[in-house]
Each structure stands twice: as C-alpha cells, then as structure tokens.
Image (cartoon, rainbow, N blue to C red):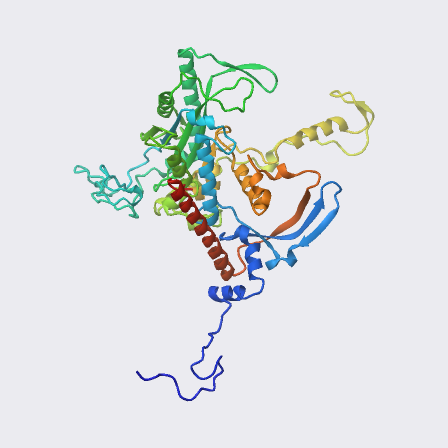
Length: 591
C-alpha cells in the first residue's frame, strides 16, 4: 500500500518535523469542552477540585464570598484570617440542597438517602432511636384521593412479570363499556385501549369538561387537615379499645406540674405525599404504635401487651372510612366541598425480621423514592406562579394541568371587598400641646398631655406583640401560593415528633464525620456526632462573615468537571458497598 504522506513538508507551522507532525486543534473556551480543558490545564486544578468537593455534583451550587476568622475561644483573639479572594474562583461553593431530582439529582440523591435512614430508623432503631421499636406494632398504609371524574388508567389483573417497575404484562381495556355512548359534552364515555406503562394519556380525563377540577385542587389543599383528623380518629379508636379491654389510663405530669390522665397508647406516624398522574395527592404512611411513659413524655416505650398489629390495622381502616368533613363556604360553592378519602385504602403489617411480605427496608426505600419527586408525574414543572406568569400555565379551556392551575388561581382569589379608607372608623386624635392637668381614669396618672402617656405606651406594647401581617380570613387564599403544586401546600415528607430523628441531626452527623474523617482519632468517635460536642476551652472557632455571591458554576466546563468527579466518587462508593455486601453475603442497601 502506497504512503499518503507528502514528500515535501508544508510551510504551515506544526509541532514536529514534516507534514506528518501532530497538529493541535484550536481550543475554544466558549464551549464546555474548551472551558474544561482550560481549567484542567491550570496548575491549581487539583486544588480547585478539593475546594469544590463539598458541592461537586450539584447543578446549582451556592457561591459565598467574605472572610473566615479563626478565633481562640478562651480569649477571643483572632489567630488567622482568610478571605475568599485568595481562594479558587474567589468564592466558597456549597450544595444547593434541593430535594427535587429534576432540579439537582446529586442533592436529591443525598436527601433520598437521608429520608431512607430517617424512615428506617423509626422501624428498627438506630441513629438515636431505641432498638426496641422493632417490637412495636407497625403498619404501612396508603390513603388515596376520591374520584373526581373518569380518567385513563392501566389495570393488570394478573402479573406475569418479575419486575413491576418494568412491567410489560398485557393490560385490561381502559374503560370497557358497551352500553356507554357519549357524555353530555359529546365525548366518548368508554375507552377500549390497552395503555402501555409510558402512555401520555394515563391520568388524563376522558372528558375535560365533565371532570371536577375545582374539587380536586380543594382536596389537595385540605388533604393535610384530612390526614390530621384521620390520625386523631385512629387514636380515639385505640383509646376506646383500651377502655373496653380494661387497660388503665396513664397519669402524666404536664409542664405546669398538673396531673393529666391520657390514653395508654399513641401513634407515631411518618408519611410521604405522592402526586398521581391525574394531579391528586395521596399519602403513603408508616404508623407505629407506642406506649406512654408516665414521667418522661419523650421516651419511646412499647405499648401494652394487649395491643397487636391487627388492632392498629382496624383503627386506621375505621378512621379512613369515618372521617369526612366539608370545607368552609366559598362564593363559587356556598356549601363547601366534601373532603374524604377514596375507596382504595390499603393497610399492611410491617415485619422487621425480613420474613414478611412488607419489610422495613422495602417500606423505607419505597417512601424515600417519593421524597425527591414533586409534580413530574403530571407533566408540569414550574416555580411559584405570580400574576405575571400565571397566564403561561393557566387556561380554563386548556389541557388537564392548565385547568387545575386555573382552578387554583380562580378559587384562591380574594373573596371580600375591603372597606374604603374614607369609611373606616378612626380613633379621636388629641390636639397637640399641653392642657390643664388631669388624672387618667384608667391608670390614675396625672399629666398635662392630652393623652395619657402610660396608657399609650401600654397600648403600643400590646400592638407590638401582635403579628405584623394580619391573618387572612379566606381559607382558600393559599391556592394561589401553591398553584404550581396544583393546590398541595404541605411538605412531601412529615413525621411525628417521636417517630425518628430529624434531617438536621443527620446533616450535623455528616458534617462532623467529614471534619474528622482524615484524623487518626476518627475511629474513636462513638454515638451521635455533633459539632458542638467537640468544643472545649482549647477549641478554636471558625467564624465566617459570608454573603451571597451567586448561584451556579462559573462555566459549563467547571460544571462538567465537578459532576464527573462526583460521579466517579459515587461509583467508587457503590462498588465498595457491593463488594462489602458480597463479602457479608447480603444484599446492598438501596439507599
């Protein structure tokens, strides 16, 4: 084969000798690859990687600027002073901490792992929770929303697949009705299609005009109150059951020193909210039954032996079927909307020995998965809507999601007419200057002012204790604030005070571990690690005066390098966890 190299070298400049020398293409710093190449060729590249390690993988890190002072705790003397101007990029990077996987996958993954540990600790103990909770009766309950209209669904009566997440079983017809014709709006009332798992029409109404969008957003708004009343009804059921079985009430000493008789058991729940494809919220909850300690109200003790997991199942089923209420009146609906759970209420016992159908790890992993989700299932993602942006998403004649947002904005409108300023009553104002001495009839003060200064000061002090923002009288006003969430304004993961530890404790433990992971004495720390536990008279404090400098990476190349480094670190941790699980002969933890 003949050579393709030229015999005479070209005059173009290139590294090497001859026309067959290697040429270096130009590097354009306005591209992601170009800016990454420029960053990687800098001499301080590895120092920059170590500097951004705390926020590596975050898509929208927070940049802070300012100075850090190292202060001697005993004397207050400043030992060292550092400014962010001398650091890489003249800023300190910190992760955004967003829980939504569509916004920041890295921070959402950390939040999901924390949620898994928090929920599982409430079932098996650890992280400061006594291990005796593994013997408490516990159930996994699912409370669904009622029907607001017929929607497209996918129903499989008999599964033959091995993985439900990738189910490819043959589904039943969506809504097979031979005698159904058209609705009053001229739309078909039946659907004979066998929908696939990723079909875009799942959760969409068969007829948008027949669907009650107003009722659904109001249910989302009051779903938190419905859950609160359901929990109270279940506790009342258990208290009545204790009286019938002769279990005595417990005398508890209140904070004021009084003796109060309470029921011998209480519920310690932890729940996660999930938005279905139709935009209605339903709850997945863990309910654990605890006893009452007579002297220590924060103690977690087992319930009396007379209570079993079957009693807890009956209490929750009875509460779900019993609780129902009407919302306050609204100009669009004077009688209010009825709020109650749907017909599908599932309550299953939880086993902590790994032998049952529903185990502690399975439930904690299932609930932690929904902790990083929001309205993605409905196809709508946006930030908080305002009067300037509502027109881009709300449409009374649009698709299903647009009508839900329009219902939130319309029902959440102000429903009262403010009184004009000219018609408002005004307190009589005294004329300026001194008058003849007089005695205040209220406090007995002698003064020559037209108004008693003592009473005026007391009245001003009373006004200062009141909230600056008056409490709104419209219970539906929050619908506008949470229109981007289709009316649901609660947190997606909530728990009882005594169910488990808090997210803040898990974050403090992680920070303390990272501060000491490179020290030889790191293995000597036992129990719960907190930064304040390591402060003594000889400890130097780091005091920072940092201000917000911006959001995001400086260049797309920096984001790519930081995300790559974080991905490699996650891969190493995953490999190590799998190897450790292989040595122990167990399955690696899902979180």
